[in-house]
Length: 68
Image 1 (cartoon, rainbow, N blue to C red):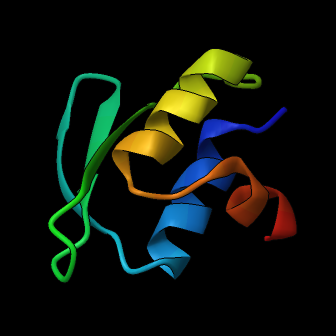
Image 2: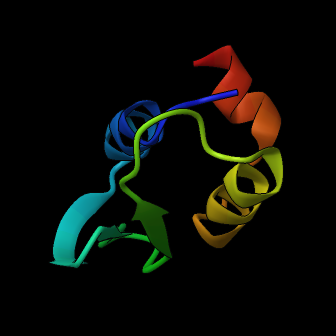
């Protein structure tokens, strides 16, 4: 569905900045909305459910991501 790199790029375009990284998990936060998202940096596509969860935590929806 989408790689971690694509998700991070999408979140950054929507105002998120990198706050910290703990192991293979990158934590991003939007300073305006204060939403936070944690993206696991692993090779290959993220599972569909995890992608939904990341976008929900970020205050975004799947149609936003698919419209890129």
